[in-house]
Amino acid sequence: MNVLAVGCHPDDLEIGCSGTLAKYVKRGDKVFMCHIANGSLGHAVIEPEELIQIRDKEARESAAVIGAESISINVNDLTVDSYNDKVRNEVVNVIRYTKPDIIITHNPDDYMKDHEEVSKLVYDASFVSSVPHYETKASGFYNIVPLFYMDTLAGVNFLPTEYVDISDTIEQKLEGLSKHESQIKWMLEHDHIDFIDFVRTCSKFRGLQCGVAFAEGFRQESCWPRYVPKRLLP
Image (cartoon, rainbow, N blue to C red):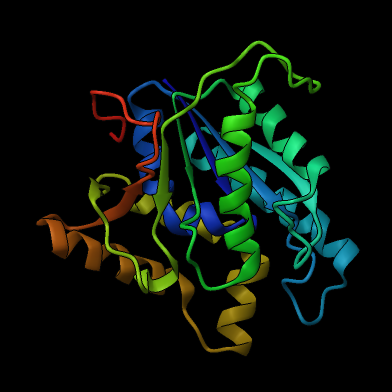
C-alpha cells in the first residue's frame, strides 16, 4: 500500500501517528509524511527564515528514522487557508504523486486554526484530486481515498473508533520526535515541558484504552464514498 500522512507543522505527524506509520513501513508499505506549514513561527529566539530551514531538515531526518519520504508544501505558520486554491492544488499534486490507498490527517476539531485548516484542505483536495479534468502539475490518479483523522494534542475531545498497537514502534516514534530538536529542546529549557515524555504518556493512555502497552487512536471519515470493506490501519 501507499500511505500518505498530512500534518500541519513539521512535528505534528510524529506526535499523532508516526508509530502507525512505522508499522506500515515495517510491513513493506510506502509511506509519505507531508507537512503544510513550515514551522516559521515555532521559536521565540530563532528568526523565521533560519527556522524554516532548520525545521525542514529536522522533518527529513525524522522521516528517515522510520523510512518514510518527507514532503513540504512550505506555507508560513498562521496563514494556512483551506480556501486558498494555490495551496489546495499543491495538496492535490501531493495526492496524485503519492497515489495513496489511505490518507491520515488532523481531526477537524483541534486546538488551533492551522490544524483545522489542514484537515479541511486534505478533505477537499482528496476529492478534487479524483476529478480527471481538474488539471494540476501531477495527474493520473483519480480515486477518492479513505481518510482517517489522527488524535488531537493530549487526546482532548477525541474519542478513537480504531486503535493501532504501537508497542513495537514506540521507540521509533519517540526517536523521530526527538529529531525536532528546535522544538523539543526549547520546550524543555524554557517551558519546562518534557515533550518526549508527554507523547509517551499519551501513547500509553491510548494503550490502556485498548489493552496494549502503547497505542495510537484514529477516527475514519464516514462520508460516502470513503469506506472500503477491509481494514486499512495496520
